[in-house]
Image (cartoon, rainbow, N blue to C red):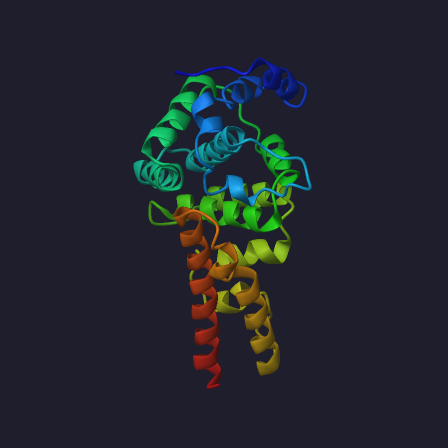
Amino acid sequence: MFKWIGAVLGYMYFRFAGAILGFIIGTLIDNWTRGSRGAFQQMFNQEEQSVSPGDFELNLLSLCSLVIKADGQVSQKEMDYVRSYFVQSYGKERANATFRTFNELVKDREISASRISQYLASRTRYPARLQIIHFLFGIAQADGKVGDAEARLIQEIAGYLRISRMDFESIKAMFFKSADNAYKILEIDKSATDAEVKKAYRSMVKKYHPDKLGHMDEAYRKGAREKFNKVQEAYEQIQKERGI
């Protein structure tokens, strides 16, 4: 079923010598390169170095596996969350092929969060990387709560992905409940004026508006809508608190 592409294998070797060589070997599989583009493959900036669909999927799945194991235990709910997302994004057959390849070539190897994230950072657009962080938090929360170890790991990955501190804290706040989280989501301080609150809201709406991602597959648009809704809820909460 799987057909190796020797020329690309040599190309990839020079960029991934070391612990994740086996990881890269499994990335360019015929049914992926022939198939339709998945949700994330369309996010790539063609002006930068590109990444193949299969390569991206396995890199993403590897980051997922790190988050699932971050708190020292493997949650079935978190694994189901990942499987459901991949099926929605790529279809059942292609998602299953990704999981099989991961289990055969990657599962028992050392996975480097820094190497994978830095690789993706140089080959994907910033909105795509924001969505990766949102997705990883979604995995962590699938069992009911984002643990401290999971949050620390996702923050580390965000750093490697070159996500700004404010954007990271904004997305993180979407998965925690506290009195100040509405302000964190809008990336402002609680001392902000009403005018500054409105300005921040408009800025975040522009950043996360789902219409900007209309060309993406449904799984990705769903994630964008979730972030957008959190921004709306945060703004409404602040309005209610301030009576504006």
